[in-house]
Amino acid sequence: MLRWACWAIIGGLAGLLLVACGRGEQTDDAPIPTLASFDTLPTAYFLTQNAPPPGFSSLALDPIERGLTDHPGWAYTLSGSFSGTFDVTGDAAQGSLSVLVQGNELGQARRVVLEVSGSAFAPGQETVRLEGVRISNDYYLVDVNGQCSQGDSGLAGNAIIADLAAGQIIGGVTQAVPTGHRDTLNDLSAWQYTFAPQDARLPAVVTHANSQVTLAADLWVAPEVNAVLRYEVTVTVRGVHLLWADRTGSTVSGTLSLRYELDPTAFRELPNISVPHGC
Image (cartoon, rainbow, N blue to C red; front, top):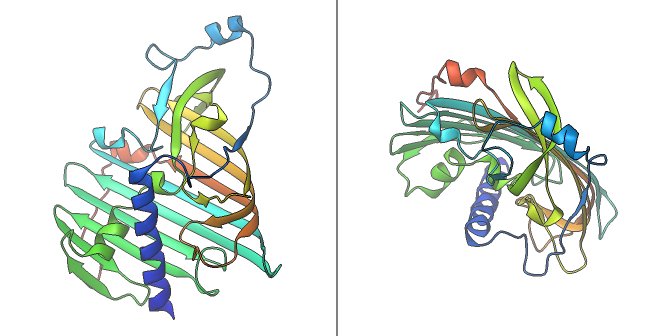
């Protein structure tokens, strides 16, 4: 069962990757999500007094991790949860996920640890943990049983996990503008941004003709490192499929929460990425 769950998730990720490469929306008939706006935007004077540095008045942040590979090293986490019901049966649909992604550009290495659990995300109720590592052109995959396989990019499962990125799940924003609010997050000066509903891309939610999606978001950018520091999305959905769920199965309704958070310490201390234990 665990091995089947492993490949079900890998297959679903492959589908997400193909969709993300092929087009920017969730489905051909997907309704445009409704974005819950921030508080009434401040006055023009307030915006001017609290404007971000030059060059950051309008940003394209899709995928959300855009620009990280320009740094020698980087790392971020993506966490999420879902609480709701399966539409056909009315049974509870719960789930959680966590993704740790580390990159060492100098060492040409990348590491991803994916963990999912719950009926909304993983087949059955078990927890599925996968680790993928890429070092140069070599790929390694540690499956749910702790067994390691090695190969190059031609070994699809290995490459899919090791190359998994936040943009394949939480997506990004095609155009964002500052709200005039600023703060210090993780010792970095950060500015809050907002965006129009049609500028949000969220691959985690696969919509259909009668689906309903309402999205609220909180987005912070640090110009000093030219990167998104934090991106939180809360989505109320009805009649959708999530992530790698079987598209022939029941849709779900409920609330999905996703949080992307950058780890700025990785800019100063390059992640140590090595061949996984047991490979």
